[in-house]
Length: 169
Image (cartoon, rainbow, N blue to C red):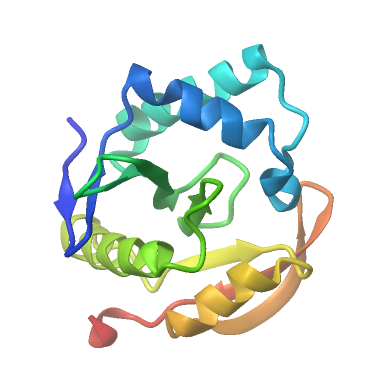
């Protein structure tokens, strides 16, 4: 069972089928250009959506749906993923259209980072960010992450940012 984390403004919870429309809109949007998306059809988006459930079942962690506490609007997804081809677990975030610039990703990422350490002993986590994704780079740095190295991920250039360890929690 996926846990639920509550912050001052957010409820971070398990994905559910009713979330698919928001995820589909995100997957089909240009907002996914730095994570290999932007042209997903409904079938590809559905398979990716189902993979979230499998990740939780296999690893015991994954992406949480970020729900605004006051309005119940879906703001995005934040969580820890460790795909088969990943070098280690990664703290990642995806905000849906209209929710950037309000501190939601920062608030959720801090809570998830602490949860991942306390419940799974994970960390210091890394984030893999495309070098042109200036908003994600800025967020990683605001979270206290530092650039560790340059590499490639699925054939694209990638910057690896290292988050602070448990001493920062």
